[in-house]
Image 1: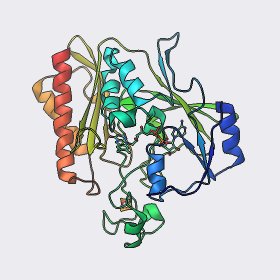
Image 2: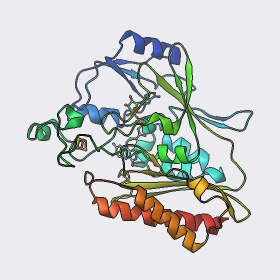
Image 3: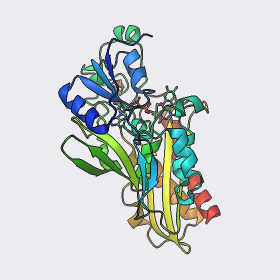
Length: 328
Ligand SMILES: Cc1cc2nc3c(=O)[nH]c(=O)nc-3n(C[C@H](O)[C@H](O)[C@H](O)COP(=O)(O)OP(=O)(O)OC[C@H]3O[C@@H](n4cnc5c(N)ncnc54)[C@H](O)[C@@H]3O)c2cc1C
Ligand code: SF4
């Protein structure tokens, strides 16, 4: 499938990119690695007149540790680099595990962490060729007023299938956005709406510059489990990110974030409070896994059934907690 016509810009600084974005207000789009955006353009799901590439901005893909021991990941850091960097940062093992499981090795050499977080939602009735789309009436996400997945629904259930955001949310990461006037620091979990049509809340002429991870806490363990049919290329049909902090054997904090089961990375609320002070026994693991299962409400709009994806959430949460216990 051929790409539509567009003008390609390669600014050399973040400032120049922001100025350009303002100048072409609403007619252009940011591109990092292009591995998600260009596919949507081929399907004619988005047809920007201008593409502003971040690839020539030096330093935007660096990873560094600041004086507070927080880790700053530049938005254009390639996923293979991210995976490699976090392989040795033990409490943040989940970042390595999520990054290394995105797509294929070749794609991870182009794909960036920023593009991964800000990718669009997906649906098997939406991510289709223009030819296919012509044969059915347009759904909510294509400007119509029906949904092919959930009959009579007034909203879109397209699925957020990014691998990195759930992990970053579980680890309380903050996203740093720049506009030409100011800088905004927003918890990664607040970037997302629950609207499948418009999943990203941060709008306007802004660029994601970096993601900041808090300094690793003692007793913290994190892991990411992914369910997909074909290892090596597939998006998650369900994914589970867990961050658990224990003092001796007692739970001091617990955060669980799901992907592939809703229109946003879905954080299960209040787990830290509910399970604070408890010991991680097999019964408790079952209880937490069941709570995650009850919070996951996928619909039948991906390649596997919603029932199976929900059951996989329960299994993966249990497996992750078992691993946390073994590694403690
Ligand atoms: C075969 C295949 C398999 C894939 N499998 C997976 C998978 O398993 N898991 C997964 O999560 N993804 C998967 N992807 C999707 C994609 O490759 C990744 O999500 C990748 O990390 C996107 O990064 P990118 O730099 O290429 O983003 P781009 O395509 O450049 O951009 C994606 C979106 O983010 C916006 N954007 C990018 N950077 C910025 C920024 N700094 N500031 C503001 N906006 C920005 C763009 O405007 C665009 O809307 C797959 C893609 C393919 C083709
Ligand atoms: S969930 Fe429904 S409205 Fe949303 S993209 Fe799929 S078919 Fe369209």
